[in-house]
Length: 557
Image (cartoon, rainbow, N blue to C red; front, side, top):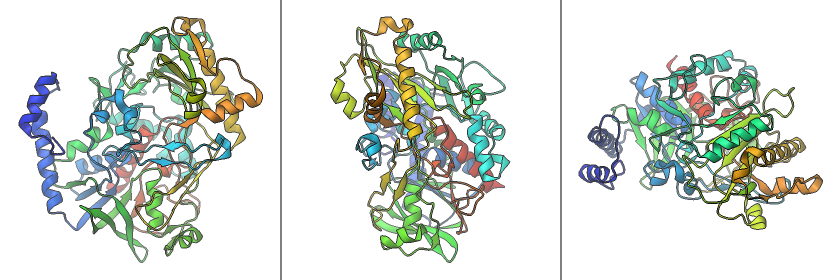
């Protein structure tokens, strides 16, 4: 209905036929969608050429920022999104999340092959749709560790970024549906969060297996593990009544009927227009034609892990030599744009054949955890995720040929030391950038991921899980030495959590300062995962919501 493919009458008929129920009534929802569509059609048809704020990207951070700024101010706000509306069934149904990967809702970047992952090119899926990653990811709501946010506060020189302040923001935006906890959880906010609903016996036995091998199991994965660093349990998920509640639904939809908010979908941004030392507007493609739109106050890039540095470099902000090499005149020499790129590694995988098929629940992943393999570590170095499908890299899948009844217990690397780069392929905005992640290039990353593989195997082979394991499919036995390292390199995939390409810091080499201002340019800021000096040791969606909230607070101040 939002996209105009069906009218209000057809929407109501379809909802009645499927038995779809929503609080407040389906007719109220139809009225809301009608108002949103009418408002946005009108505003696109008479598009203004000047706004107070332009926000590039409607991902988790962009939605968090735009919705909050629009709700709490009367500013004229333009949100520009390269992708389409988030109305596809594969977005709405969390069980289908992985079917979005490689489609038009995904930017489709692939890291260049590197020796550290046995010369494999690894996909880096990022959202090209309203809601961004929160529309195509596995719905996990996992908040940063205390050590994550305190590190940001330290390197930025601004205590406003610390854990205590972040926790208060999370409590304000959450609508937590689990066991009440006044210290850690909030209710009544826009973000619906619930413990994994009606989990399979497989999931609950995995937690028994954790206990059996001495791993700590907690009631809530967004509780004291944020301070201790350790904890395994049922995931927190942004799923309500079996439907995804993405950050567009949480923050952006509630303000789209307002007259001060315009959302342009299917509108890629080529560059930021800079006059002297001031960002004055953007150049974007509206209905196939280049259009320049101005901002009276600020432009905020929330375009995501690879597109934000790409837009900066196309605008003349980046490493001077690299810009000249692709025919772009440098405006600001900022050598660290596109450097410091990080992501979490998800190993695919340790596979186990179940005695019979089962229908997976929620997003097919309901149990996870974090663990410090050395108590002296500041942060956990490994994670474990149970996946109710035979999740495997292309190499592991081909070598071990898991039966369709297989499930995975995947080790993960959440505090990577390897760093990659993003650079321009050319000065053509339609060209995707060159993503060179250099996964597992640091030897400590290989050691940590190897440890996570062994932890995953120990859980799956515990007595608690015997009823769900006919045999261990992959690796099939304990591996050591080069055999283990090869298995780790062959199985490396990612969580799709690209971060760090425009890091925040108090030093003069940082791309942005603690107020998220791009150094060297006035009226230009960044609010997305790229500002992370060090990637948080958890899925990045909640951290991006936090960044969007912080940006809104800064702009309102």
